[in-house]
Length: 183
Image (cartoon, rainbow, N blue to C red; front, side, top):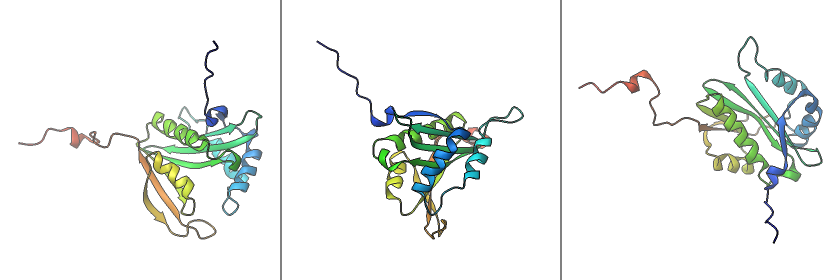
């Protein structure tokens, strides 16, 4: 009798690695395909990658990853900035042909894990008001809508600001909270 084959989710079939300058042309092509009205210019990606290595002994403030399928094709990418106490999702994108298979969730969880490892207390993101699929993903992962930026995007669409706490909100957060109550 043969042993059962371990089933891997589609998202696990993607190889995730740190984004490098060599990835930028493909990332830019996918960026323009997914976000035709508000795609980042090429220089933004290179500028962001310049912050993925720390300077003067300090920790890097940016982290970026790419996800590739078994054939080596770019399936998605994600990046964040962490300036304590906050982390901010700078970008998260999944190619249409790879959507709906858990890759967006995997990349978002990677960003959340990195923010926690960097000791961020909260992670923020902005999402187009006309992107209910992304909003649903973020809500499933514990993000809540905290603010709307009216007409934020170049085409006039609003941006929803969403946040997820990364620390125990009931834990003491200052020396005042640690003191015993005065009798």
